[in-house]
Length: 252
Image (cartoon, rainbow, N blue to C red; front, side):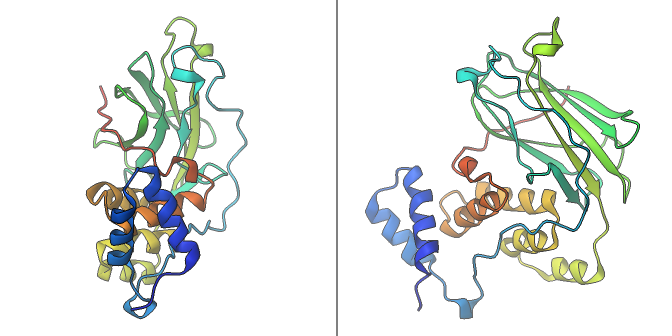
């Protein structure tokens, strides 16, 4: 059996060391998870952005110095650098890193692209600790239309009286249809292959959701951890790769 190459090995090493694994456990896991190319595993989960124009520029971002976010950390949406992601889903799942906060209420708003009319909005209850949270649009939200781009905002309600001081982030989601070749590949793929198929096709929201699902269901699996790190690194979010997943969010 061939060993994985050195760059992958050190990626594995850095990820596992962040979780403070003993060296003996590290060696055992790397050896157990090393799979040759002839057996089909390659680190191929880097996201390939689709050929789309960038969404309109916005001045959004977490308000600096907000008193309700611990250590003045910022909310970070898990998105490509241009903040636009494609989805095949009628109601996709969105992810954010949210720091620990003294308040537990956030507001989510989904708007249409051009006229910025509200399509859906809800209040979310935030967890008691920092980490990566997710929110799937519920059945009470309208289905996203194919070929249409939507603009969303997540705001932590630090001050209900003066909303200008509340930290917020925004992003964009566009629903698209899968080409026949992509549909065929997805239909026959094993679960561990889904993230790389979506990432190769430029379908961000599903690439992220399926990779997160594998990472959460098998927290000690080296392959799932490296794939998660690889996907986030490809969009400059690898600093969040070791952040824990935190159960959230139910809409009120």
